[in-house]
Length: 522
Image 1 (cartoon, rainbow, N blue to C red):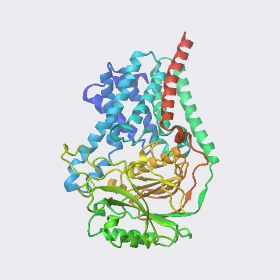
Image 2 (image 1 turned 60 degrees about the horizontal axis):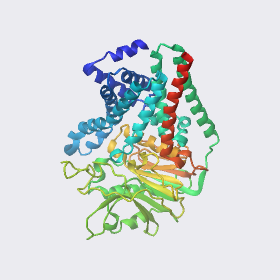
Image 3 (image 1 turned 180 degrees about the horizontal axis):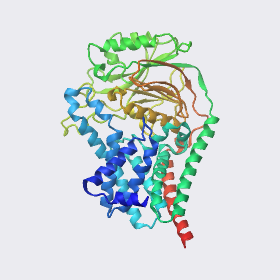
């Protein structure tokens, strides 16, 4: 192992950047949908070795940046699909968007390496302690990435454990950031094998394997007692129309899109039990409801007796009211064509739904229309007849840990309407679905996800998939609604205070274990 470390440190010039970007690409292959977890080991072990061997904090930053660039370019390559929906206008921007996003997010991995090098140079830590410090700093930067410039906590490293229902359960206590800490620490721990003291190296590897086994075993025990329970009298029908994004807003096709979803809504029940509530995806109705006579009545015709239809549609300010504003909204309509509730998306996608600094940037948003969407007031808990209280989340609002459910008037389930047709048959929808499963575990709440082209599904309060309709399929899901957990999860109670706590614990462990080993050596 020491020979491998020396060979990596000997790489210079452009080969150095290429090697580190390559390690980042290896790490990306562990993310959904491939879940090639063993590749995390050479990726993070190599990065830690490189940071340890740099001569300055600036060089460490560059190494971390190249790693992050490879990770971001591979993990976010699906972004390019959105620019080819209207290829004539935006196709040329695709490589710049992927490269620009990867370069920006790589700053956080660069800062991880920068601060890690500073700690390594100031404190005499052994290799085990350095790995823990590096993992803690990585998680700190992931947390920061979720807030800076409105935040983009996509592909957090803990997402790799969605491959295992048992491993995921740790998120109920620590949130996804605890899984990220585990991922990076375990993947980077083989770096200790390059040290001279083989006994301590073996102990370190044995310790992380023991932690992995404990997390998996704890999750298995937890799930063994979970069971499957559903809300009495509630049967949901999720409609996945599979309408290509390039066709979605064409004026001559929009009416047909609504009729297609009405037909799917009225299809015979799959389970033999008629649905009580119909749910359509984000912007499933490509009209302004209030400005389209007869539309609400047509939608109400699909409502089951005593139930509701819930769907996404754009919403506009009243005629004559200035300034003119539009929102990306959710509606709930009953059988009498009454709008029982609305919700406006508040966490908007930059360049997709609005253009930041639009007075200075000569670009247009990707979504239809010239007017930027306006943000809604924030998280909401909606109470409707026949349904437990729920928290509506539109599109990528579901990816933000600790920010999907109100603390006061807490919901009993989460509803995510989305349209991943922008990203075609790429890794993006799989990554989005994985993030949704983690939010269910963190909050201890079931989550219902309805996507235009998939992946739609019903997820229980432990992150397990109850029903699922795959990417690129047309159809419906008929499913009961799982119940919430009997008690709130630790993470839902403490939120990001728990993130801070696990970081302090990791840093403290690095110091204590280093001091213990040093005393043994004396």
